[in-house]
Image (cartoon, one colour):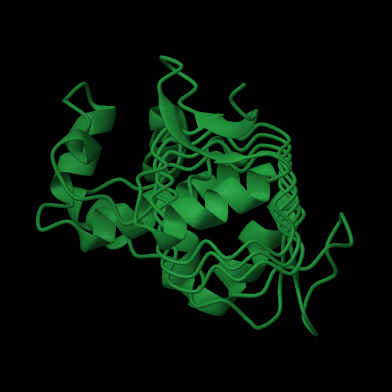
Length: 230
């Protein structure tokens, strides 16, 4: 009789990714897969207990980690692009160099052990933001564009320039918010000049973390009281 195995499968098609004989845990299987360089793309790890897991360099692109416990996990250089981390506990997790482009972090518990560099937050998907933060990120995208005048044309009925340039920030843009800002100015020259970012990088980091309920050790208390090392 074949011994039962603990398995990790893909959430979209049920394909087996990796397995180990029981009493191996999901954590054991995930660590073994990462150690062997196996792809964990679109892995189903909903509410998985991965506390302290060593998943450095793991390919978790599009993985479903909703509600997973990653307390103390090591995710250095892990690929978490488009991963679902909604409600995940990343308390004490190490995310140095991890890629989180378009990862969903709604309700995730995070506190940075050190003040994060702005490029760390640029890799996160921020979704919808309050108008003030939405505007600041649009101003940063506009000012980084070789043709900031396209943002003015956008509110006048042109195509969204964010569709054709590399975006510095991942968030839900708002034509209405940008229009409200630019309508304060009469000339094209004044409008272009008004596209300069208004916040210091450190102030933006603090504002984004406060909005998300994330903490920064010695700078900002987390709304959830958890800590993530970056």
